[in-house]
Image 1 (tube, rainbow, N blue to C red):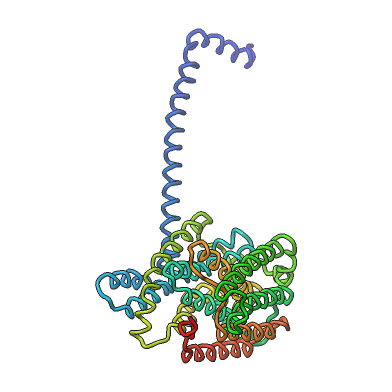
Image 2: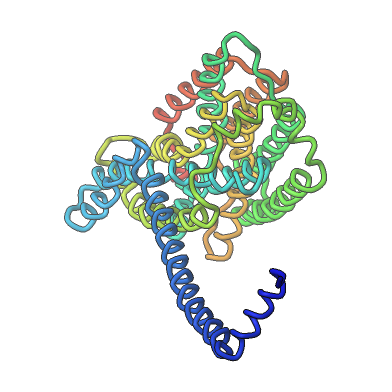
Length: 434
């Protein structure tokens, strides 16, 4: 009897000389097939990747340009540009430019919020305030280039007033109505730091105006300008120190109130998932900023003609109408966060934006005017400076408790209506003083 193992050995020995070439052929054919199998997979994976990128891009275009209802106003921008070249009706050009910038400013705020998902809440609030103020900065630079210093001053002042009274008031009101059965709290320490910076900005604006109207300058017309440029440099240093303090030195000061709310992580993940990628957000920021800058040029050119056509003071247009459009991003963001009971972010957007304009944008415009050879100064006239001073005091008193409700919001909105009515009947005395 031959065992099974011996049979297997005999069979393998008999087959080896006959099939000596077969394993190599099989190995070669397998390698040949493998090469042909792998390369189509590479091609298919790259095509799938390209398809996914196209789908992501199309989804991004849909989310940014079509999803929001306010985007129905986007065609007004091209209409304004067309009217600028086809007719001389500055009133219509101004109106359509104003309406056309509104959705762009709101979308700029939305894209900044999307970018904030990747940068964190503190940097996100700073980015929101910065790009929310991009509209005002662009309008100011165009106006400076055209020598319209008073428009720059009044539009920036109006932006501060709008953020502190209208934006914050609407946010407090809407948040208080939605959460009427609870007290909404915010970080009192951070709010007081911003209030202190705003008072410092008022100081920087107050002394050039007092120096001018008391006629106590050493060199008439020159001392006021020199003081403005010196104060602007100091304010820029103070704002840079504030950023270091906020982002590096005392980060816990700005995140302590929101920490207990991190228990509801599931709800936050569902409600706050980013809709576009970080690269797409950066690309959209660049495109929207460019679009706003183009449309702002036509808007600034039409201001004077629109004032005459609509029989409306330039001061009212600059202080009330322009900032409402420029603050569309902050308005939407602040209200949305207040309704989600995230008042720290609301204050970072509204009060942080006012702080940034007063401590960075205004001094920056003075320095840019200095480079351009334009006599841009911090003399905002007594009426405007007094309005800003009283507004800062009112808001500081509202914030000192560290709590908000709908009645506080209503009071801030009513204060803004008084300010708007005051500028409607205000005559700018700058021409008489010159």
